[in-house]
Structure formats: structure tokens, C-alpha cells
Amino acid sequence: MTRIARQEEPAMMDIPELALQWYRAGRDVALATVVQTWGSAPRPIGSQLVIDADGMIQGSVSGGCVEGAVILEAIDALADGKPRLLDFGVSDDEAFAVGLACGGQIRVLVEPVGSALPVPILEQLVAARARAEPVAYVTDLESGPARLAPAGAYPDRFRMDRSGIEDDGRTFVGVHNPPLRMIIVGAVHIAQPLVVMARACGYAPTLIDPRAAFGAQGRFPGETILDDWPDAALAALRPDARTAVVTLTHDPKLDDPAIKAVLRSDIFYLGCLGSTRTHAKRVERLQDAGFTPAEIARIHAPVGLDIGGRNPGEIAVSIMAQVTQTLRKRS
Image (cartoon, rainbow, N blue to C red):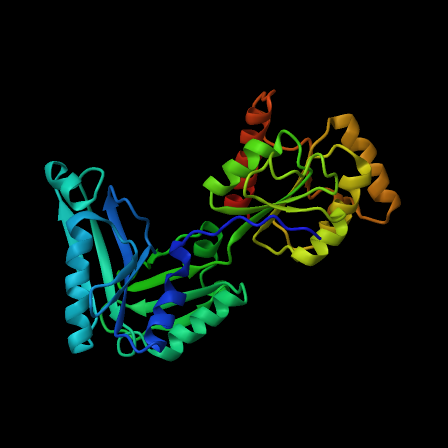
């Protein structure tokens, strides 16, 4: 199996791991988290910033002087070991200077690691994330302490990837979902805009195509491309409930093995290129292979929302829209 791996850039989602790494290296560390926003905010709820006692930082909770103020408060928190709940509100005229697009408010929780944020909790959080296990970081903003909870305790938040404060006004739930993935079978022309859109929507795309002419690095610069047969590649990738699979080859020899490999899996989306007539023939082959009508009904085919798209970019838009709709509306 050949891999052409994209060079990873620092990601916001790596901040808990970095905080633990810094702490274990002997640095005094605080973790700042956006817990609430009103109006305009450049970083969503759940965004994090790690700060050490020397003012070194990674990540972001806003920008401008808001972030500068958070850093100063974090250094003070490291000195006394106490958490801080910081509120920032600005007018439209002041917004640009403090890193907001226009007037708004943000609330930031600052937790020193080792006191307000117990090291065992941070270690358990990092371990759960390494296992790709969905987990909630839960803390009482008025009294603490922090704890972890399973995704089942907050199903709507995990379905929507939405961290936030509960109705009681004091319980913050930080959602830590496994990364979203999109596995695309067929490095065809539609796949070229689709990988770009998938990445922009927060997915880590992987292309599968054993045909060297299609899965060439020059056609997909920097993307991860697997040249194994689709069923073998999918077995190695182990798609899960945070995975969308899209088959685009329009060739049963390649698409069918992929479909059969994931049709009984936990993936949240399976879309297959092809006309209604093509899909009818596909259904017959799957029925002959022993798949039930309910299993086959999981397939979105023809793939994508019906927006009248014709060129590769428009079809990619329709696919990405349908993937998003399926993810956000599932119960």
C-alpha cells in the first residue's frame, strides 16, 4: 500500500496533547478555553490556547488584545493555582483592535494544569482522544472540579460538534469528537474539488485508487493516496462513525468491493456515483451478495443533493452538502 502523506500543520485539536506534553516537561501550564460567545467571535466555542509561565503560547481563543489579556491572566493563574473566568465585550468601533470581526462578547475559562485542571483528568482526556473515543470535558464554571463524561451523556452536542454551557448557566461541556474523515474511492475529476471542500469543512480526506494514472500525486498534490484495492485499503483504514465514504469510479470492479466493505459498518454516510439506472443494477448485485434492503437503503445514490450540478465542482458541492446534512441531522 503506497501512501502519499500530506504534511500536517499544527491544529487546534492538538492543544490538550500539547498542554500535557509541556506539563510533563516541567513547565507551568494553563489551558484557556472559549466557553461562550455572543455576537461576532473569530474562534468558536471550545477553541483553546495553551500558555506557560513565560508567556509562550500555542493555539488561539481570539486574537488582538483579548488574547494578550488572556495570557496575562493565565500567568497570574499559574502563580496562585486558581482558575479564571474572563469576560470580554466590545463595541463595533473597538472590535477590530481586540480581534473580533464586529461587536460581540466572549467568555474564556483559564485553568492551571495540576490544580484547577487535575493532571489525571488531562491524561485521561488525551488518552481517550488517542483512541478516537468521543468524550466530554465537563466542568462547573462556578465551583469545579473538572470531570470526563461519555458522549451518550450529551448526544445532541456530540451530533452537532457543539461545545457550550448547559441550561443551568454554569456547566460547561467541551466536546472532543474523533476527527471527521472522508474516504473517496476513485481519484477521478470530481475528487479533485471534493478533497479541497472536504478539508475546508474539517475532514481529513483519503483517496483510494489502484490505477496509477488516476491516483497520481501530480493530480492531488500533498493528499493521502492509497493504491491498494478498495476493500483491502478500507480494512486498513477501519472507518468508524465519524467517517463518510464516497465511491466515484463508476466501475463495479472498484466501487462494489468498497461498498460491500462498509455497508455493515458504523460509517455515517455512503454515497455512490451513478445514475438511477446504474444504481438499480448495483442494488441487484448487492441483493445477490446477501445484503438486505435496509442495508442497501443506507446508500445515497445518485450521490449528492439534487441541485442540478453538472461540472465536477458543482457535483462536489452537492456531495459535500449531502454529507453535511447527513452528519448534522442524524439522531
